[in-house]
Length: 345
Ligand code: DOR
Ligand code: ZN
Image 1 (cartoon, rainbow, N blue to C red):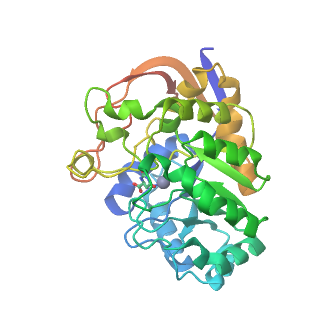
Image 2: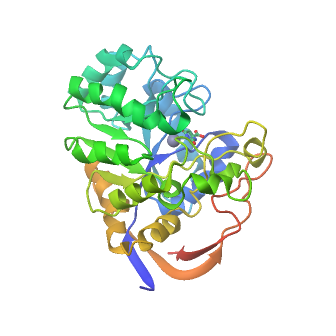
């Protein structure tokens, strides 16, 4: 296949940041995607509908005049989120989901939830209002090995949660393990998952290939090859429970190449090309459109896009760096060649 034309995709998990960083990264996402679920882990986080409305306006103002893009907003769940805020969020129409971060799990998660059961009143209201819950599915207990944190979250928190709230719509975000894929597969139809390009393309070996490679460090961390293969299988299976979410998470070069580097891979520049390579590796390019463009909007009960994009089989080199705040931003697989390229309209 030399050209692949598909319905314009959406990104169901994206970090856009704010201010100058937002202005630097937004055009990359808007070039590839029509819409994105925007993560609320700013400093301070987006905890209320009022804050989400203001952030949404800042995003809209940052869209270049020759591009179109629709930000779909989320609220950051804390121990103090009220059921009333959930009702307001649903009524706003522009808040599409609520994001759960376990306190301390990842970037800007200090105000996250300390005990998931503290949020049961909020979950009951979300179930009633039919507002999806997006999970960073990792435990943070220091006695749990970092490679087991997703699996332990499923066993100790997620299984009980879905049995307490069987009708709650849940997205297990950026899944990284065969256990997560299996859980979602066996769960009811209101439970789905997003999968990132890095977890489809790389195993944890890549993190240490020839030395420590901070630009491959994200959370949840890359896992063993057998897990990558399970994710490839899930993404290319044609099952509508699995859809695209890049988790593109920009951090300036100096904060990644650091003695205590930040978690996050930057893929907004070339997300569709990365996914195309992953799908092509198992001869499943014919499954890419539904994964990227159909199953997400179906889950979120939004219309599918009607515009098209085209990917062409042509070699190009990913830049070493793109402009960002202070020091530049290093994209995933910087400096390497890619075999697919998105064509300009
Ligand atoms: O790698 C990650 N980066 N994982 C997250 O959960 C957060 C994200 C970020 O905001 O940088
Ligand atoms: Zn994320």
